[in-house]
Image 1 (cartoon, one colour):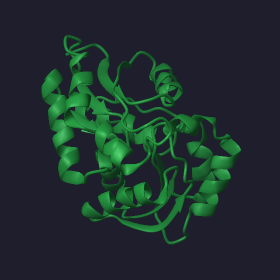
Image 2 (cartoon, rainbow, N blue to C red):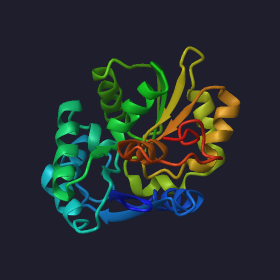
Image 3 (tube, rainbow, N blue to C red):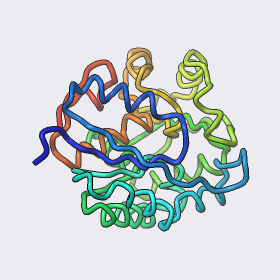
Length: 245
């Protein structure tokens, strides 16, 4: 067994790095993250389009990326992309996880699968969703949750066509949009899209909404650590990551 937990992260574009490095620091040497970059589908500027996402999430591309992490004795690996893992439904998401896991001989998951697992793990059933995506893509995420028996009470779309523009969104704007997006009947707020740095504002939103807030990067980290059974509890990043695994 490795002294620290070794997690492989397949990333399709820029945006999540700050969250992942920040988590690694607060985990106090208990977690080591190994990054590999996968290809992105579509023409420049439309990678949130469903056809582009089907290209991004194809098995050949993410497996190619995973294979670059062979030899690092990983404890788990994750396809760290929300839209590239929900775009073709839950059965295909399971195939993605199986493919990357076989590539590195380690347990595997993805961001979308981890959203489902996180909601179930916290006993949550009804979500409000603040999505960066255009509406057709956001509705595909809601359908993915529905396949798992989870419901969406309210959906707000920011209609951003490319993940490359997401990291530039001001934190204040995201927080206000999230508060507006939340339906009082929901028991959680979901914010998909790993391109959005989010760990730093989760507790602010939880304080305002009084429910767990699940963001793409938080569930990605939690989901991979859950596979190992050895994740640390960290403070300052919300309910989900505040639980020891």
